[in-house]
Length: 279
Image 1 (cartoon, rainbow, N blue to C red):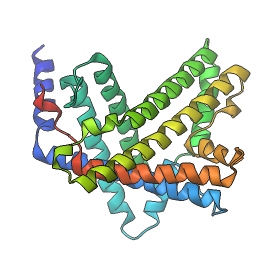
Image 2 (cartoon, one colour):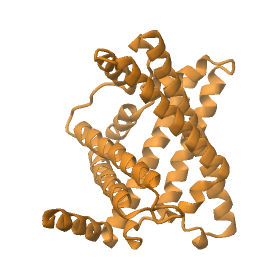
Image 3 (cartoon, one colour):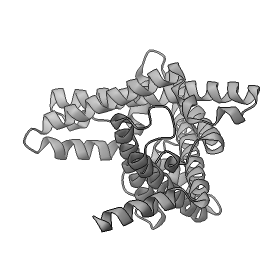
Image 4 (cartoon, rainbow, N blue to C red):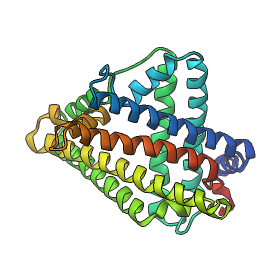
């Protein structure tokens, strides 16, 4: 019990430190940079670019190819680590927004913590030369492994449902402007608030739409018992080019991804990051 208490106190002390808040904002900038690069790569795919994957791997490679790339990647690793700790702190102490003490809110924070931990680990591995595979291939590989287990089809179906629910929740939150509750709107000027609101609506709606697409492809894989039907971020984005809107459909979604990247920079400026003030 003492060890657990000491660990909890340690997390609270770290999460309440001003430097931790600064690094959390660095992490939001890193997230924004990733989304900007992914959106840009998707635009290149839409209009016949070089074909680099429009996902995390492609974005990190774009950073690594630039002068000072390893330094930027190192900062991104630190930023994602801070984001992960921030979300774990919110899972323990609640979120500094309305309803932040609800179990569903804490669970969501824990899930985001796991996501940022994976992002930190993936970026760190990339920094040390382990580039891995594209998100599309990873999705197919994981789906195939799950389907090889007893009840694997149902596990894939559950994952599909999770992506669909998440995507729907994000879209509804964008329409209802719920993201504004997480920002220090009192510190914004009128024009800034209108800009941030527009970026948040468009960017979050695009992100939710991609989540719905990934979930739909996973569901198709589960129904057909064919892991090749699964799609990662890159594959889901490319599929938008197969809609009646063609390349312009993909371009529209890519523009939404770019917009979320810009919105992430706004979060880096105005996001409420002190999870301990409720604890």
